[in-house]
Image (cartoon, rainbow, N blue to C red; front, side, top):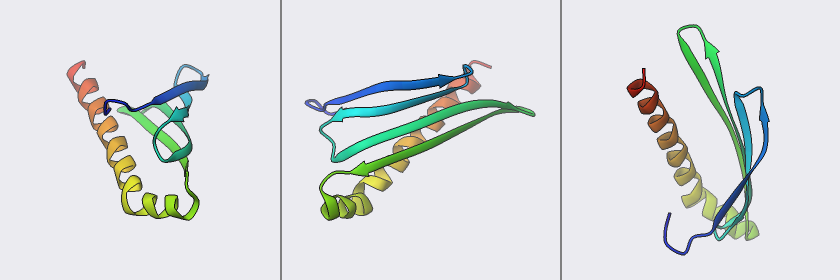
Length: 94
């Protein structure tokens, strides 16, 4: 995170020790609100990790354009990196 960035998150709920729902409640990003849920479920031969991710941009139409041109791809690559790191950590510890 860049110096001077403000990002505050909180846990909204946990379900059966396998899912967590969180929200971004303060940031200096151009995001009005952001909420996500991550669940880890056992499946035959491994685990299934699912994530639901929602956000709304600040700045109306300008925010929508900013999202289309820049932020949407950045969010997707950040989420992909989270999953890749998680997979690497699981493989190392098994």
